[in-house]
Amino acid sequence: MSGYDIRRYMQKLGWLLGSSSFGVIYPTLHALHEDGLVSVQVLSRPDRPPRKTYTLTQAGRGAWREWLDRSATPGASLKSFVMYLVLADGSSRDRLLACLRQRHEQVSDQRAALERMVGTSGLGADGGTLAVDYGLAVASAELAWLDKVLDRLSREPLPGGE
Amino acid sequence: MSGYDIRRYMQKLGWLLGSSSFGVIYPTLHALHEDGLVSVQVLSRPDRPPRKTYTLTQAGRGAWREWLDRSATPGASLKSFVMYLVLADGSSRDRLLACLRQRHEQVSDQRAALERMVGTSGLGADGGTLAVDYGLAVASAELAWLDKVLDRLSREPLPGGE
DNA sequence: ATGTGCATGTAACTGGTTACATGATTCG
DNA sequence: CGAATCATGTAACCAGTTACATGCACAT
Image 1: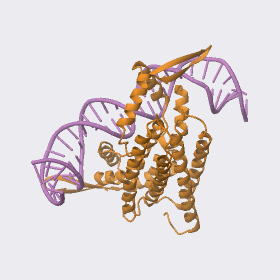
Image 2 (image 1 turned 120 degrees about the vertical axis):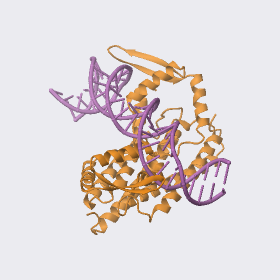
Image 3 (image 1 turned 180 degrees about the vertical axis):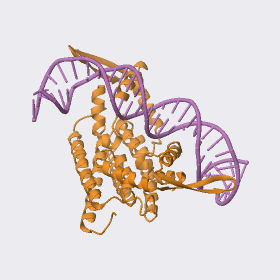
Image 4 (image 1 turned 120 degrees about the horizontal axis):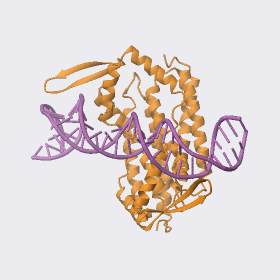
């Protein structure tokens, strides 16, 4: 993908991620290139900025796998979980299963914590009732989703990841 | 609340917000105090850090209302929406209704965009299928929640906000 | 005519995190 | 006896946003 493509892609998930800007994407791509983790194919078109398509090198793919392994404990936040999901397609099914199960546990805890908050007043007089209620709804939805995916993945043992 | 309390509160929602640290909270509180938007009650206890309880002043409450009014267009991200919900309890019911309806529209759009992505490959070979699927689940859950709250709010016209 | 989409990039700023310093108390 | 909780605060650093520069093509 090109920097522009990446940005467009992220923007569609921007609702969950909090959109990212060119200011990060391009410098990052340059850095990755210098480190030899990506290769570039430049398609110059007269009089307009050349289209640069980046592809993972073998070293890059290695680093990616390493990252997937290290991030066994994905940051608890929804944002980082989405980031993980974006990059996780392609990791082995076992690893994916383990991560999703772990996530399930974390979110369960979070939901329990929110449930304990229900009566307790937060900021204002009846502070943050809405926020807590919303949190509960999202947590439940995520747990249901995890159950669904976990079930599907563990049921069909097709050679999903490499 | 004290800085410590605020942090604890945020941490419980940290899953949705991406936790905040003392490094921001204390300086912000000091700044608010200098601007006369909050008052402090210091409860000194011998030999341990004094407990400082902050309360909104009248000016502070004014600024808060102003913020609620200005943020008619809450940033589209889930994070900022949660932030809004935390602070929105106390705004007038009409304003709240308007904001939630607007949010409903935004999320509908986002979901539609995700639905259009389903077939399209993203990053990897079958890139980000999981992320998109997850996004759809969360979007649907939020829309259902919004419907529920919107319905409840518009039905019972009790003198909710001031 | 004016704006939006394509497509790259840099520089300044600013917001937030991380890491530190301090110290009593309670729980395992 | 060590770890966690309570409770405040500062300073350095870094990640990411905002704003700029450039310019064609296509639609309204």
